[in-house]
Length: 343
Image: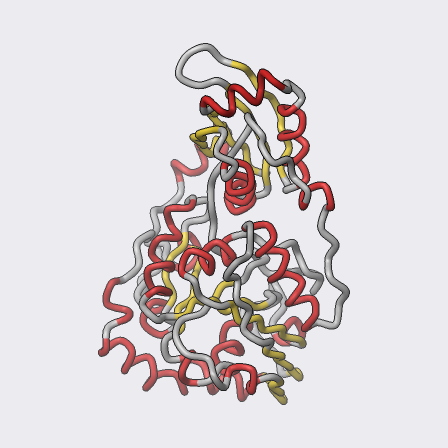
């Protein structure tokens, strides 16, 4: 769980609403908790801001979701800062630096050519060697797709990305980028930090880097590229679905592109979390129909749509959403948050 400090300034309408009904504060706190946060402390302040709130949330994407839901009401202005405990801050000071900016050359024609030429050696041969067999279902759902898209998949193995690349048609695969943890794949201690950018078309994502780091992938989506992202935020140890992060929904809504869900089975048998060497096993990929988020009212609703679409591909019942969250009050003043993430 991360800690966040939220500074809230009420608009004239928000101040008027609060004076008319002071219980709106409790309503906002309850709504934030329904969306995945815990309000630790809250103070009314004299000066530039009306409230200072300490909250705990799983990650920046959760905070972004809460901020999008509450601040969209137009009754407050929010300023949010992730807070780092001092012992963790001391650890960060000792960490080796890592690259946080994408390589600008990786979408150039020469890089695309090298990637296509090298794919049989960097990806295809491993999929053929260890996915015995790989069966693919639902490719017809992408027959008429054109342009950029968010590609989401469940995440249980380091073998997931090669299978996703092998599953997609060339029209999408040849312009597919992948978000990769900067501290793992782009650390300066690694001599070949260019390798994932060149051969996997990956770009670094700073864990907890905030909503600003969505600007690069959104710009690529708008120019016709697709982005592979794992909305659970990390590999599952059990194979069970974790709650989806808001990042994919935010990017899809900002770039106005569809989301392509892919559910994969068997990859935990090939290379589960913690295992370094793959072993042969049967694998299956099921591609769903592209999902349009056009007209969806909120980030939370969009995130729920994507998660339930993936659950449907897996043959699972939809996850029920909180009726109270769906029926949020029309006007709410204080408490708040903002942030973002893409993993």
